[in-house]
Image (cartoon, rainbow, N blue to C red; front, side, top):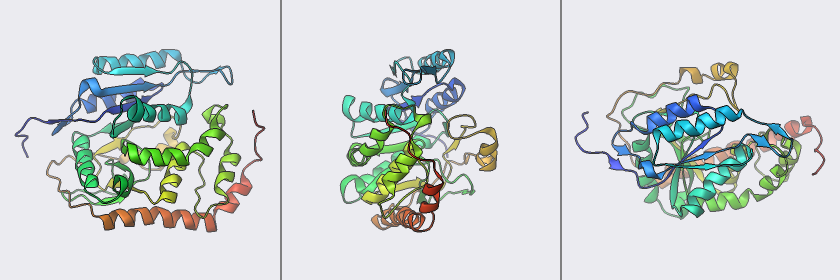
Length: 322
């Protein structure tokens, strides 16, 4: 359908978390500037740029030239935006937390959209996010009972539309997060953050993190910051909501979580953005949100009962404290 009105200006901050992949960042920024039906406010886009030097290991965790290129790429697309550059390497977990603190404390936002540099939004991504945001705002309870929401879709299933369904959100990519939900999640994560402090994120103590989960009814086998946040949502009954339709595609073939081989093996190389523009969003009901929360809760309960003990037994002993 033809666009007949000027796009609505987005009234929440867009926070971009980046390190040393300016080629990916270029695609993200270009996509944000070509959104349809919703336009970003260029002055309210922020780059949370991690540093390269680790004072803990006395090593470079990224190439300084690539980090500088990342900042330059952002400034080229968003000259009115603001760069928040870390003086040292914080790692993924603490750089993302810095982005959250920026959004909810420094900028005093009630809600923000967060993007790492390895998601390429399609032209209707922010419009889809605003649709979700509006429906969540009408749901009962703090933050509508929702922790995170996103619109990148199920990469392994082709949902041609036009009707959009609401499915469990797995990865924390291109997500929306409210301050009220963040405060609850962040409070739950403090023991996890204490374990991370003093070490590079890539050298985190996997066994000590898993030991945190051992006494619990629910557990996950991963030790990433994404997994810790997912578990926090599960334990507090917060749903993670995602559209079935792919309004974005994941491009992170190289990085912390993927290699070229795993990227292909998991099917992300085949992820395509649906080209149509006549999507229909049915109401997001409290019942569906409760089902989504239960879906992840049941999975984590089964994982704790059936798999977790073997996973933790296979991990090496705790690393010495620093």
